[in-house]
Length: 225
Ligand SMILES: C[S@@+](CC[C@H](N)C(=O)[O-])C[C@H]1O[C@@H](n2cnc3c(N)ncnc32)[C@H](O)[C@@H]1O
Image 1: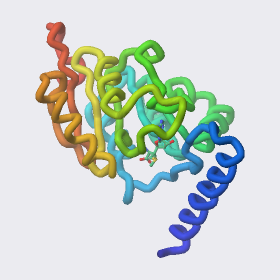
Image 2 (image 1 turned 120 degrees about the vertical axis):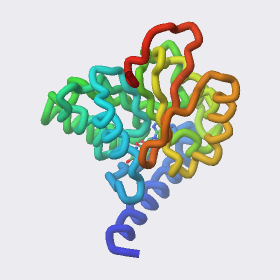
Image 3 (image 1 turned 60 degrees about the vertical axis):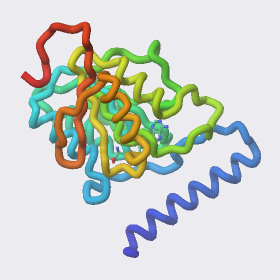
Image 4 (image 1 turned 135 degrees about the vertical axis):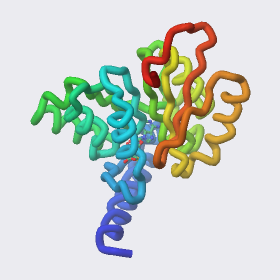
C-alpha cells in the first residue's frame, strides 16, 4: 500500500470512528458521508467519462441531474468550461464536499451559474422537490445499505423510478457498471426494460446509457438526432 493510500485509509477510518462516537451520544444523528471523495479516474472513472459523454454528444443547454459530486466537482468545473453549459443540479451527502463547492463558488461565482450542489440524501427526495431532467446520472445507486437513517423515504428501486418519472421525453439515464452497487441495480434496470419503461441506448466507456420511454410523446429526440 503506497503512502497516499495509507493516508486516505487513515482519513476515512478516523472520520468513521468520530462519527461512531458522536452517534453514541446522539443516536438520531444523520448518517452522512464523512469524507470528501478525491478525483481518481484510474479507480473511479465515471465522472470523467460523464463529462466526455456530454461533450462528445454535444449536449448543452439541457437539464442535468448528477448524483454524487465528489469533493473535486469535476462535473461542475467541466460544465463551466463548456461553450454551451448544461444546467446541472448535483447532489452530495458529504458536508466536506458541499463546503468545497461553497468555497469554490465564493471564489469563482461563475461556477455556480450553471452548477448547483444540494446537500441532501437521495433517498429523502420526492417528485415534488425535483424539476424535469434531460439527463440523469445515478452512478452510485444501490451502493448504500437500506434503513440506515430516519430521513429516508425511498429505497433503491423507488429512487430509480422517481428519476425515471422526472425525465423529459427521450431523456437519458446513465449508470456506472463499475460501481459495487451495480450487481444489485442490474435486476432493477432489467425490470424497467421488461416493463417497457426504459431501453438500453449504448455503452460508453465505463458507463451504460438508457433512455426513458415515454409512450405518450410523438416529439423527436432532442439528444440523439
Ligand atoms: C464514491 S463518491 C464518488 C464521487 C464521484 N461521482 C466520483 O466518481 O468521483 C460517492 C458520492 O456520492 C455521494 N453520496 C453518497 N451517498 C449519498 C446519498 N445517499 N445521497 C446523496 N449523495 C450521496 C457522496 O457524497 C459522494 O459525492
